[in-house]
Length: 162
Image (cartoon, rainbow, N blue to C red):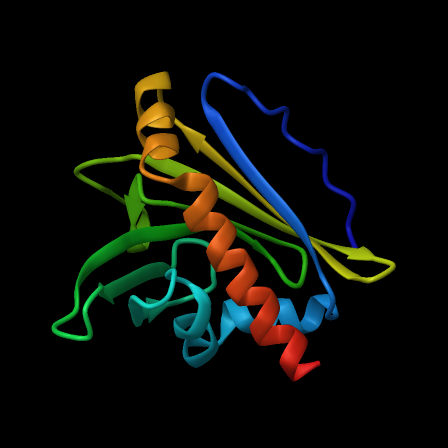
């Protein structure tokens, strides 16, 4: 595993969440890398996720749709992977679309890190916003509950598989 410097957290612009997942990093990585697995945890249940594109390479697309009521799927996230370090780190943003094309309404960039832990994997999400208003809006929209719920769903999925 390559040791990368940790970016400082700016409490005015950033939100973070972390948890210990009782499964190996390889299982957590597969949950990110395989669309069928990704759909099972990425959006808080009972809403459902549909992966439109998951090209886990720098410049690759990350596009999901969601259904809150079991009906039609609507837009959820359109973004671009900025950095992908196999088994260790995923950086994505909705400020860009696939192929590094600028997005109309940039909102956030997220750094997902996976590290070995005596119980399995330390999973961390560091979500950065362009201004304090966007950070506050994300927090008020339920960042802690939403990202916490999907981290718990990810843990439940991979811990069952491990």
